Figure 1 (tube, rainbow, N blue to C red):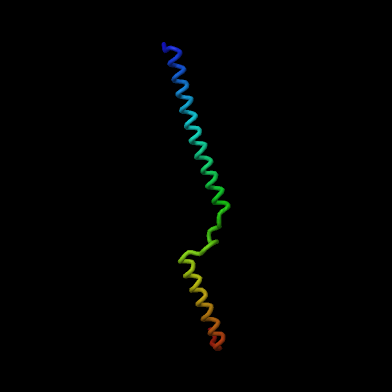
Figure 2: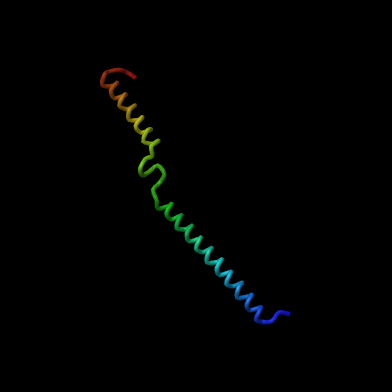
Length: 78
């Protein structure tokens, strides 16, 4: 049989390993929760500063509206 010192050493090492794994998991969980909070509190998609593609689409829409207004002012029926 094993002597009591070996059993206590193995038990202490196992408990220490379990504590390290538990703390690492808890740290990861807290990080994930912080990430989810940032996603919920952050700007919504489509909000904020438009990207280049969105800016081009908006510019094309404005140009089309100007063409329509010019046509109305000139008396041309679209």
